[in-house]
Image (cartoon, rainbow over all chains, first blue to last red):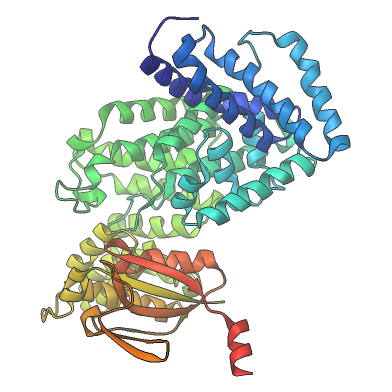
Length: 410
Length: 123
């Protein structure tokens, strides 16, 4: 045991919990498929660390200490479950690997399997991201519920149901075979990106529904990159998130006012994050496997180039959107494409692209109306623009965006 | 499913209603929000209420009438209006609640209507 006071002990617990949570949950649940019990066991272990470590000092290998404590608690939890016969194989599995484990920290990193389980096709897609945030990062249900605008009780129930399905539904903890790997990786990437938030500031006055989980999403992206260094799209996703994150500070004025991308001061952007994103994107492109996230990152990279050139190469952005539309013709992509074409080839051409979108699809889609308002205003169609502004304002969630649009509307 | 959005507003928000400026940002936000609800086809009904100082609360205690000036609940944020929405799920109702201009300066309570109890009452 190391010397050190209670403060140091608390810090050590926080650090180990943050860095090892997912590794420990993944390891404890990989054989048993019982994620919920693994989490309960780990939180019991963390509670006992909170009493033991400040008193006895931080153990030399805190992660191994937690694993041992969690494993004991896991066995108790499984024993206490009433279904004795059903839990027998679980106990056997736990006993088997306890022989060779001892106090070594050298246990396999099963987080990749856990990520694939969280984004498994048998799990409700809406629960992929919440499951990852909880099982890999240890976020509590209430925080996840806030981010996803779901009642905390409801989110708690959905998480429990998903974990029951993992335990009882025959979902295997494994890395998918090569032939089914691409769609399964896409699901993992999608889930991480969904944590990052949607509607980044491509366009003037687009509602940014940040989930306040950007840091967590980037952390997950880094974990995935460490586990799958050969996948170009993993680098693409991380580059995309870092490019957007680099502009966080510049998106608000000192008074909290919303500042659209076109009016941001590039000097406010974070150079280290942009450099890291650019490096990741360059490495990704050397794999020669184009993909959605690399293209989206490439679009952000063109914007980032304004720091150097002082201007935005809209024709390059249009070209990347055209490639993106072939892979992923989502509402967001089509709206972003219209905005980019509006800048490159004039508002009339951009509007024509918006007009091809089915009106039923956009009745509650804020970015469409923000872009439409912007293009109509540039054409001097004041009253049509005012109508579109109203729709964008009425659908905006962020009051800073709402005020920006109200001002633009005039 | 039908949901009620119960809109709780601060004294400032109630005060801003007396603002005669047509460019009042809060009013502009409400107009736009109402338009968005209509255009999305989810608006069933609703109305703003006058301020809490106009409220009168009535009770009968042991058969005796008790009349109180002011609203039922003594809180900083007071019921300022309600909106009834027809949407597929609670999730959709919460999305609309988040967009409500009152959500960023007050609070919006989302409650499902109770057609079962209504049937019992109306027979």
